[in-house]
Each structure stands twice: as structure tokens, then as C-alpha cells.
Image 1 (cartoon, rainbow, N blue to C red):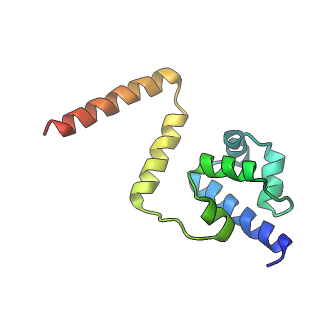
Image 2 (tube, rainbow, N blue to C red):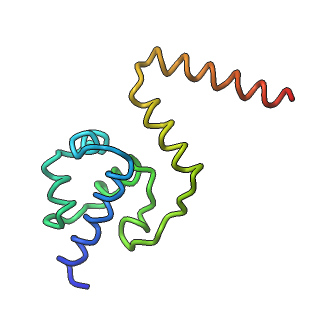
Length: 115
């Protein structure tokens, strides 16, 4: 696989990951701390990734570098999807709302442990 084909394949996997998470290019680029035009270039295979950018994308998407680079399918379970959905919801909350949600979750786990 030549460099251009590799960039296209990596970009396709990044775009698919972003879309599966329900993020727009603008939202996801902000999460990754890169410009949306740079993310667009990466997704179309026009630009290569640095290790720093790869790290940011993997961290923001909770995706392994193996998947982004080699297409090794991550284990996708309904539990992972539910967790991603909850994390997305929590990240969109205000600090005060997250604090209340954390208190509710803590109480829930205390109740489970008390059974």
C-alpha cells in the first residue's frame, strides 16, 4: 500500500469513527484540539497524521491506534456503545450538571454494593 492509499484508508476509519460517535467534523476537531480544515484533509487522505495528532484522535474517540492505523476491528459491544453514549451526554453537561450526575451515579453504586 503506498502512502496516498494509506492516508485514504486511515482517513476513512477516522471519519467512520467520528460519524459513529455522532460528532460533526467541527465538534470532533474541537475535541481533538485540531482545526476542522485539518481534520477534513486527514479524513479525505490529503494529509498525514503526526503521532501527536493520532494520539489526540485516539484519546478523543476512545479508539485504539491499531484500529486507526491498521483497521483492526475494535471489540464493539452494546456495553461500549452505551458507555460512549453516556460519556457523550456527560460531556455536553455543565459543570454543575456533571456534579449532580456524579452524585447520582455514586449513590447508585453504593446501593448496588449494599445489596
